[in-house]
Length: 270
Image (cartoon, rainbow, N blue to C red; front, side):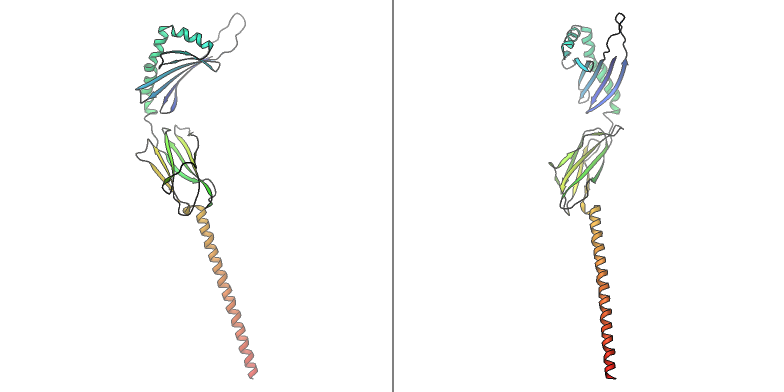
């Protein structure tokens, strides 16, 4: 089997634009040969648009690369003994060398222009949300996560600020996740001690935004704070009810004792 594929790499994105599968069957004498898989992979790398283009043609036998062409060098380079024989032969063939050198224009720059509107020029603004991934416990370590999704291209900067000061050592990040629709997603976590009055900000910088997006999060508006507030209110109300009930019982018992004393005194006078 022989496979050929073309990869374009622009702004850190790998785009597969050509995939061709050829099947070769060769029989020697009456016995079938062992199976071999030969692959050819063409890759284009772009810097500053098409100003600086690098073309690589990789040749692989049974998943082992044995030789490749590098347009920056202008010749074939061997990776093993088998590849050395092939590279020496290809480098001796002017027609083969000229064809591979021309691929910088005929393959790379050509496909760049046709795919540029869908890759380089395409932008999608990120959505930013903050969630508390653990039960909020004030005065103790907590983890809050900034979820950024729906953005393209994948180059993005996410920063955590606590009370306006950038956090560093306590910040961790997930790998860049593909959403399946050309957009990307990333989770950036901050593990820190939270106190009443603290303010946290997730700041996102991306090429699709004219200016950074900042989303604020305050613990006193969290569910935990509301629950504690409700608990305090309920406790206060119940305490007030117990006080009122106790006072009513006390006043009633006092009135009964006074009335009994008055009746007893009237009987003595008679």
